[in-house]
Length: 217
Image 1: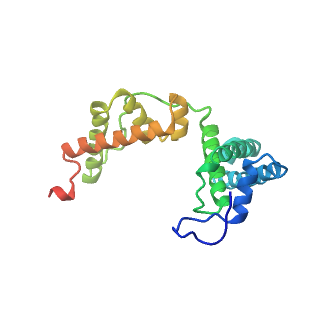
Image 2: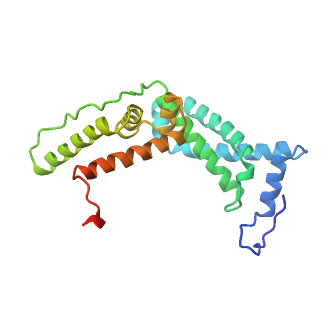
Image 3: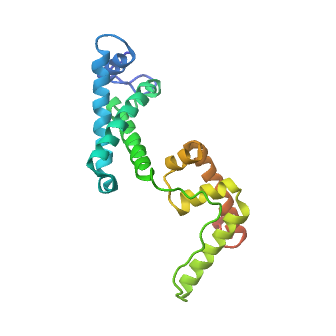
């Protein structure tokens, strides 16, 4: 790979020479390869540590030793992920910035998995009934009515699998990567399911008169 600091005639991003040298060393098997990988690992390790420091529940619930293990594991996984994704780098940012994001992503995933490791994920198809206060004000009555309508819609317009996904992600706020692991699927499949769920629920709420589109007036 070659690079320069001069923009191309087509306006496409030009990868700086030092980034090109780093990427070439990561791809190669010459004497600079191991140093390039160490530099990569150091970068994603800093990113992982930065992310975990921003998640106080990791430290308070799991402790400093486990938090460090999460950082180390995330850095290892991020290094592997970057090495397998070099062809995806388009030069729209500095390579170090692009790499840093891998460390943040993998640290967040590792931390959420650790926090939920011993917590049960309820994959029931039916939400628990609301048990709020008995305030009779108009706003509270309206909110309870809407909640009941959404609960009914979940029961009637969603498939069994969609109900499980909706309750876990929307009601119980289970992290999507944790739910994917528990259900034996992947994030993309759950994102697709969540999109379909929202479309169905919005359509049902519109039919029931709870949503009014401006353009229909």
